[in-house]
Amino acid sequence: MPVSVGVGVLVSGGGSNFEALVAAARRGEIPGADFRLLISNKPGVGALERAARLGVPALVLDPKTFPDRAAYFDAAADALEKAGVRVVCLAGFLLKVEPNFVRRFAGRILNIHPGLLPKFGGKGMYGHHVHEAVLAAGETESGCTVHLVDDEFDHGPAIARAKVPVRPGDTADLLAARVLEQEHRLYPAALRQFLEKLDKVSA
Image (cartoon, rainbow, N blue to C red; front, side, top):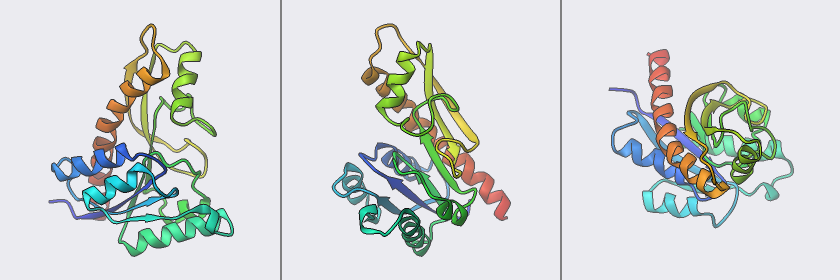
């Protein structure tokens, strides 16, 4: 039986990937995953309602209330560590994590990106911006990528990918829905794989 691992999730919006992760864990598909804390950088977002419904403790940390980004991410790291979090999942978190945060969870921060990295990544490439760019480029396929987080946007090594076709007549909304369906499958599977490796390293 895998050792229980505290998982924290950082969000900025609706939190559907957060819910997919928690639901998969509760179905026994991510052995050892114990969701300890959700942090949102925005008040009133859907992810906070999901956390309340799922019984996952949640915290709003508004960057505007901190003197700088480093102080913000120190506070986020403090809250996660206090909750017993070892692994952090970014799930639609739109802030670039600062180096001080990356250092404190080095090699233990995962992100899901709605595109096939290294294509269509980097500053400004999130949500519908990615899908619009994929369509504008005339790509025949898109998908999503789970990767480890480093000091640069969408840059750390990929650990899992899922592909979807880009179909004639696709809009950004249609493509987004097709990719999101894969995100909800890929992220739990990638987290399970990551925690299994972490468990072996810790053993």
